[in-house]
Length: 222
Image (cartoon, rainbow, N blue to C red; front, side, top):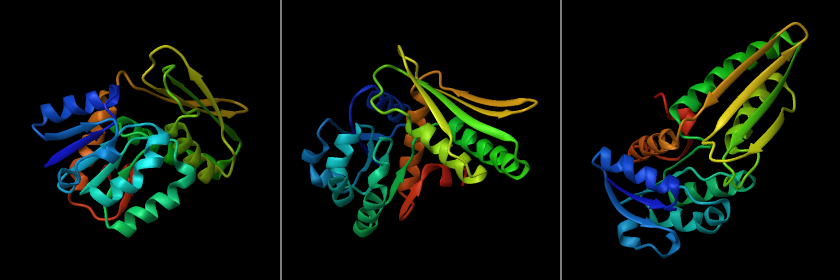
């Protein structure tokens, strides 16, 4: 298979490292994917780690020209229906995620289980604290929003999210369920960006055999 990297920042470089380890051809790296060679694109899976503004501007080009697309960029949830519809219209497989870390996707599953139980028993109030490096543009993080969505659905509440931007923190997400008599806390801490990159490459491998649009957490353990 061939992979093209859209966005060659820290995450893009980490994705390239993983591709080399797995002996997967990197067919190109681009900071301006809309100008990428369409012939190469047609036989490649694109892994997009750019910024919200870039993805908003380029998603139609991605859908029209690539064999499949993996989207790790966050901050476009308000146009999600539009994006999904366009990929489906073009017949281009897409896998997207607020976080491609395998550990975080286990974290999602555990959060879903616990919040369902607490939604039935009542008596607990949830909160989220997320911490990231000072270069991260969106706040709250896409991961925190995904967690809040899971909890909100299961407990029928609006979840308070607190964001911290400091130094070079790769990503820490803590969930608290505050009760009268006790507190339940869950924390996921990323040690580096490598876990995100490895998950994205696994998604690219899966994308070659899939049709349609999928959120990574729905297919990661299949």
